[in-house]
Amino acid sequence: LEKKIAEENVKIMKQLNKEKNKLISIISHDFRAPLNNFQGYLNIIKKTDLNEADRDKLQDELSRSTDEAQRLLDNLMSWTIKQMDGASYELSSFNLMNCLAELIQDGKSAAAKKGIGFVVQIPMDLIVKANQGLLQLMLRNLINNAIKFTSSEGTITIYAETVMGDCLLRIADTGKGIDEEDQQSIFTLDIKSSFGTNGEKGIGLGLVLCKEFADIQHIDINFKSKKDVGTTFELTIPN
Image (cartoon, rainbow, N blue to C red; front, side, top):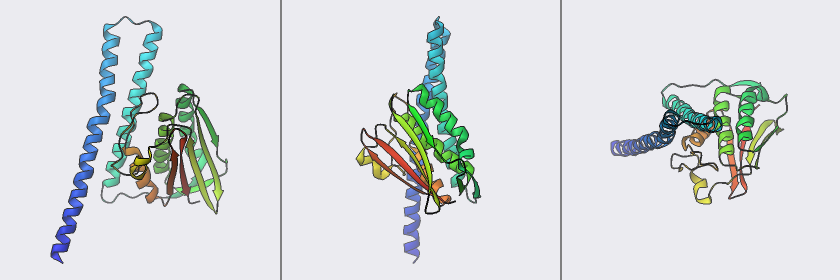
């Protein structure tokens, strides 16, 4: 029995070390890009006499890099809190559209900058039972991913309806899709970071959080994706 316990402990420690190493890799790799962008943009602004159009373009790029860094930091903080002993999340009933209103507005603005259509079809009276903070974090990651991997003139659709007493929520895009060989690992730390259609840096931790926070809230999360056709994430949320 003691040998079995020791072997199990070794297995757990190996898994923890693997996750720790992956997190360190994400931090060092994904933070490097926006930080380098900050330095480069500031050097250009400092040393170059820019016209108004060029300055506006640089400011937009700097803002995008700041957003990427902020999303990564938010995910890392959420991950850290999730790993802390005793962390608990209260579930409550609330209006889905009210919960997502700010995310939807942010999504529309970000999509418009890339020339992407953004369609929302959520009943105004749809009630779900979840944790508002966790659900917002999940949906922010999914919407950001959809925008990131969808090209100009594409479309993102957020659709919800009641099915068998639960809320069925879909986030669908007409983007680049997920490579078939990567689909088995998108909810794990083994997923590879990738670049969006405008060179945006992909953050591998976001979908891991989506899966873990879905499990906490008793939400089923699934997806279907086809290369160069698009990806649809589907959440079944109790209500």
